[in-house]
Image (cartoon, rainbow, N blue to C red; front, side, top):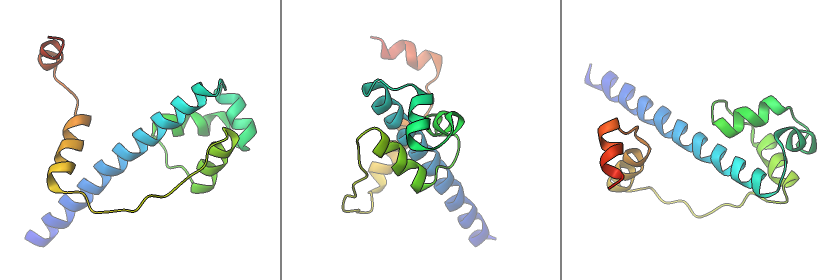
Length: 113
């Protein structure tokens, strides 16, 4: 039973991290598109995809194929680069999750100073 709970917790963690990554990738795509002065439709046409695919990619709500992602980047004059990967520490993961956690209204008010 413990193994099943551990696997479930690990899968839940992976799902959460995947959602965070998709949201951040989407935000980066949106920011780059706006910097380039492109509409979603213009980017879709240049990348050979649909406006709906661009919308979903920017929202981070749908899986995006690597090919479509690269086509979008190329349409905006950008490229995908890789960085050496290292395993994040527990503290880094906790900080990342905390930074993306929804804040309560009381906390939002106190953050304003």
